[in-house]
Image (tube, rainbow, N blue to C red; front, side):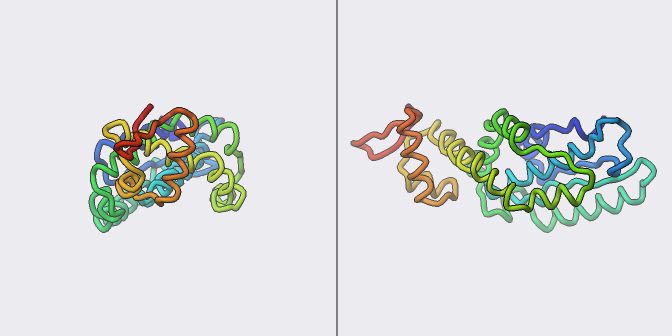
Length: 212
């Protein structure tokens, strides 16, 4: 299967099911077996997922993309050994990030819930086509990309986490911030905007927010 078909959802499902790391291997750039150059699509997708993971506090190094030809068995073994040692050093998913199981669950669920919107934004506003791997790396490190990512996705990710957390129990802003490891001021901003949109309500007596 062409690595260009590795969907964002596949990676998130693996992490949600308890995988400490995800490894994706594809043909070397310029050597794709298909006219679509699917490995460049893979590169974009993996860099995009890494950005989403980092935004919610999950180490993006737990996702690794490598170019390995079918004839490079020794390289495959070396890369897998290297990745295995790296994951061993990081420990179980959430440990090095300082996230307990509940917080980790909500953060992964928040990204998963946002996948349809993230794909739309990625396709319509973020997707570009370059001829070299370095150009993709430079693009994701650029101010232009970070500005668009901040504008289109950061707030949506935070709100997605908050909405999932409130699905279980009403909470005050302080509890939400502590549970998700988010900035209290940012949480208050998101709660106020979500309240104006009718997504959540505030109980004056209990001083807690709940889903509307």
